[in-house]
Length: 91
Image 1 (cartoon, rainbow, N blue to C red):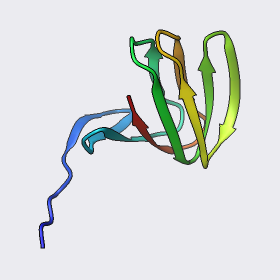
Image 2 (image 1 turned 90 degrees about the horizontal axis):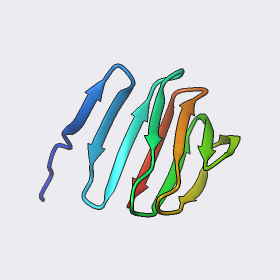
Image 3 (image 1 turned 135 degrees about the vertical axis):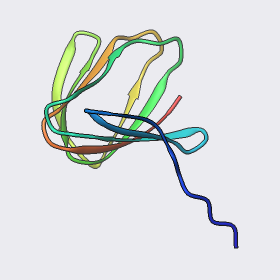
Image 4 (image 1 turned 135 degrees about the horizontal axis):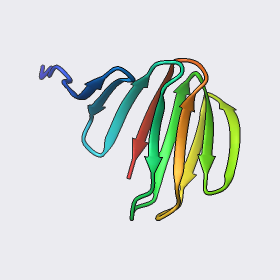
């Protein structure tokens, strides 16, 4: 049996991010802001739990997990935590 501890790659006041290979695990606290950026790759976000205000381009919407969101490449996006939330993402 091969069991490995998953170590955080970033830990700050907002929460913790883990690298699971091609998928990243993000655990964020209510009231924090994540992702306030854009990047040259498309991104698939799997909101596992919680509620966030998600901005993609110029459109903002409150979303409640569980839900899958695809962010196109080179499109601005921002995640504001309405509650604590858990997110898996791949790019």
